[in-house]
Length: 550
Image (cartoon, rainbow, N blue to C red; front, side, top):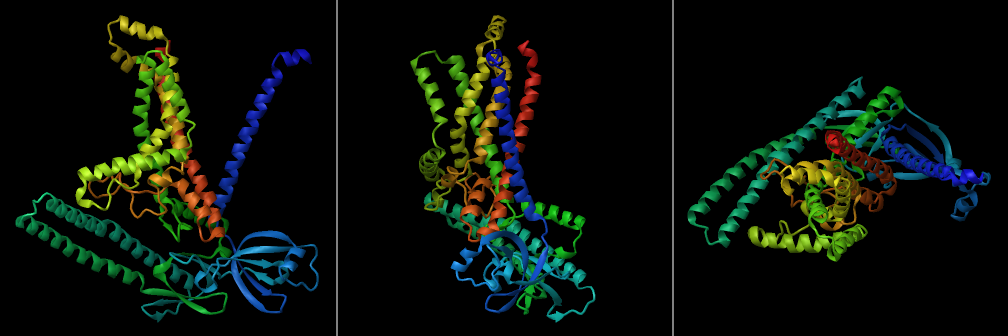
């Protein structure tokens, strides 16, 4: 036994076991997040409950079973509930998503198993996904077209056709409003700033006033035409309606311009549910958020996260590599160089919120405010670069991740044999040529390793971004079709902040909880994709320059 301990085998087994447990824990966490997030999009069955409370009052409840738990009977009795007969030590209660928010008041409701008289799954119960007020559950009764109630034997098919028409018209209206009308508004704002610039420079002549007036009138004329077309599309989308009988037994008229989809989960087979599941995930990835981010999609957050991380990578890589090359290849080995190295290492341990405060004070207020004074005085007092934006977020995270890139690059440079440098210099190459053709290519895998670590950390940071650019809801993306096409001064959405907002700032906690898991899994997926891309590039560079090491 003593020889076995001296051989080091126990430590090998302990290390292997620790690594295995860590991998199991990480994979288990990812599987939990994936299951809780992706199961949210599976079409759940709709139930109808007949209830009778302890006072004998009867009611009907329609909704989707969301969760259940066992509650001590004593706790319920202390809260004012009365049971006759006594149900036992525990009572099962169910959390039901009722929807119909404007009529019921709450999306979710707890019901006790002792109050349930009967539970059924009617085949004609439908779920209406709406643009506001959440889902609506009920029985479709009739379709109204142009104010006339249609008489049809195929109500389901007719309703689906009318909803598809309304969704298509709403999509056309949204595209017209965002692209064409948005472009005109953008040009009108540029004309206003241009006129203001002429006033500040005392160059606003009568000729320029006339030119600006003619351009503004032409844009306003185009705007009137597009606005008329927009109103026509909205009126056409709101032409039809559907009559639904809800759980109160009352008929509700629902305009189809507010309906996105209708499903009948109780009659759907496995393949139909699977198709709807993929459709829901696609909508979650590609659509814009709704209802204070508790419904809809997260495409602006995905775009903002990826765009900001790529911009940060473009900024941090050259600065980190240049700093590492200077410290390793040019700086003399002395106390100043050692202090710089210690400072770089210590920067990696600074809390991220401190970087956010620095970015707000230096980048936003000082640098951005100076840029506004120099280049955008016509827009003042409204700031252009003097307010939080994607460029300042990228710069802040670039400083945050700079030590990682420097340390990783220096380690790669130190592994390159000095004989290669000396051989290159002996053949007549300058030091700069040696660095460019020999040293940097061989150190490129280490540079990519630093970039991978930087991307992994930057993509998950939230605290500094709350100060320097991220917002709850950004009306426009940092990239659009308006010149100069890339707008680095704009605020943006981020998946990490979206998780924080939905999980902790949402007015509807129960509805937001599955979205927290879904968005968390999506953020992990985005980080993994970015890292795998960088790893593939690193492996390619390692194979390409492996011959130089021999």
